[in-house]
Each structure stands twice: as C-alpha cells, then as structure tokens.
Length: 460
Image 1 (cartoon, rainbow, N blue to C red):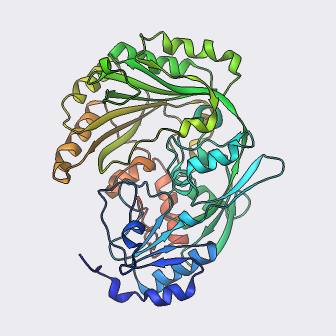
Image 2: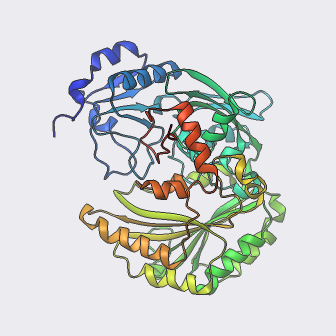
Image 3: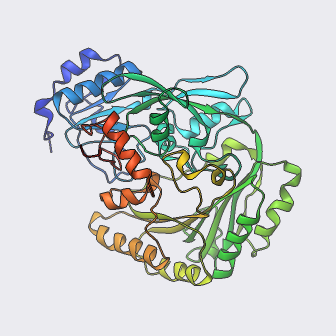
C-alpha cells in the first residue's frame, strides 16, 4: 500500500512549516520506523507523524487536525493494545522527543514531559534516591500509564500513579495550553486521572516523589496449583502495605531464568517489591517462600529501578481482557490451570494483582478511576503470531473471564484493547460515566480526541 486514505487532504509542507519538531510523511526514509507502535501486528499508515518538540507544537498539530477534519492519534510510548497510538490516514502526535525532567530542589516533586518512558523516569529520579509508582513495564510511556491510572509496583504503599499526580500541562481541543490541578481546572484534573486521553494531550506532569532507593524485590517462581495460587492471594492481602505484588499464572516458557525441569509446567511467577525497611523484609516475604519449593528465587536487595530491567521483545498480536474482583475461589484457580492448557497461544497467562492499601483509602469518586473498593485485579492475556487466529484467542480469553465470574463492574482501561461502548462504559462505574460525558461535552464537544477508549460527549 503506497498511500493513505486521507493523505491527499493533508499538506505535509504546511504542517512542517508550523512546527519546531520533525514531520515525517510516507515519502520519507524514516516513515516505516516512525509509524510503528509497541504491538507489531498493528500496521497502519498515517498521513503524517509529527515528532513534536513541545506544547506549542502539540497545539499547532491539534489545530491542524481539527481544521482539516482528519483523524488525530496521540502516542507516548505506543503501548495501546488497540493501536491507538497510530492512525490509518490521519496525523500522529508523537511525544517521544519530549523527555525533559525537572526535579525540584527539595526532591519532593518532579515535572516530566510525557514522551519519557517509565523506565527512563525511574532511572533518572532513582539517581536522587527517589521514586514514583508507575506500571510494571519500563518501555511504557509515562503519559499513557498516568492518564489510565497506573497500577504498579508500589500501589499498596503509595497508591496509583494518578494519586501522585499533582498537576499537569494539557493542550485542549481548542489548541489552548492549560495548567491543570486541584486548584486550577479541577474538573479537568478529575477527568484526566483515569479518563485517558479523552480530554486533551498531557504534555507535562508534576509527580510526587517518594524517598525510595534500595528495596527488596525481584522474581519468585513457584510451581502452580490451586492451593499455591489461593495461598499467594491470601499472603499478599495479609502483607504490610510496604509490599506490592504482581503474579502471573502461566505455562513456564523455555526462558533462561526458568529451570529446564519447569518448562511446560504450570508456574506462578511473582514479582515482589518491598519498599519497607530492608532488615524487616525476610519476615514479610517468608509466607510467599513457604508456599512451595521455588523453581527460582531472585528476590534480593536492589536499587528500585532494577524492577524495570529484563523486558522481553514486544508481542506481535495480543488477545486480552481484564476485570476487578474481590476474591478467587479454589475452584476458580483450578479453572485457570485447566484452561491454560486449552489455549494454543504461544504465550498465555492470567495476571493477579492484589490491591488495597493506599489505593483503597482514596474515595471512589475522587478520580475518574473508580475501582478503589475492589480487592483484586485480574488480567487475562494470550500472545500469538498469526492474525488468522484472532477469533480463537479472543474466544479463549472471553470464555475464561466468564468462567471466573467477570461481572459488569468493568475493567481497567489501561489494559483494554479496542472495545465497544458498553465495555468502555463499564470501566467507569456508577455516576463516573455520566460525569465524564458531561465534561467531554465541555472540553471536546466535537470528539476530536476519539482514538482512545472513547467517552462520547453528552447529548444536547
């Protein structure tokens, strides 16, 4: 395919003349690299990719897209499972060149541009003995993970990423650069904390820094059976808030860090991050080690940024869904183990994140993320290479979720793929959806920012 559906309507020369950053079109040598996103099966051809140099550039691209009636995509790290970081025939705002970081002299806060990745940010503030809880993947863009909510390695101790967001610079649908906080534009500040990119392009974030340097963390790999999985959930719930965990029930792949005797067997791969006093960590971790003879125990004192090391290659295609729950029964865990072996995907897993702690102490209506009272986050994923298998893997994911009692209270938008409005609405339970739609009508009545898990403007 040599052209894009809308490219004839876009003057790349005009766009280039307006920007300080770089504009890449289909005829440029860098085009194929510039249009890539994290999931390599997403193969779209935008009319132009604007690697913006600052908020002024973002404002100009927004105005350009609005005035020319073309689709607008926004990319921070490009991890959207739906491929929302690119467009077929539209214009992409690529924030990856915006990586400025300004740490306050008192080391309590930092302003960061949203093209920086979670790993880059964590490494940089880690040099000052500080940290902000982000997700669990170093290559994710800090803009995307923050606006979705941010369920990471310190969620029980310090809450979601949005609980540590103090202010933001946002470019709205009118191309205006606005400062957003609890004191300035509080409605917009409420909406961007969980409402993704529906309300504008966040170009800078002010994040709270916590005094964290060395932690006890790493990976513990246990043989998986219903008792071990149930025991893990119980131990994680009973642990002090200094300990956050992310566990995956999976069939052990032939990876170097997994002993050969475990390959092809069900395992519970647990990532632990204990940000409390190191001399108290052994007692905190003992209940997890007691669940079974581990295949591997790589939990040790480490600088916090090392939690983001060892990321594997990006998947080509991914099927997945997620939901919040309050418990999984032993029968549920047995179902997970049984269904894993029914999937033909090259990699399949059920991820379990025990919540509570600081996250749960924030009222449900304080932010657009409104799942504070749920105790468990369940994410089901299947990675595969052949696009013709999509229906098969989607059916496996959906069937397992239904078997585990997925209810209508919705999931986490940060991990959703392309979904219908009913599923997106369920991600914003109670009155949250209606308030978001009213704010969408106020801030983006024409729905310019629609390449996302879209919240349509309220009628009228």
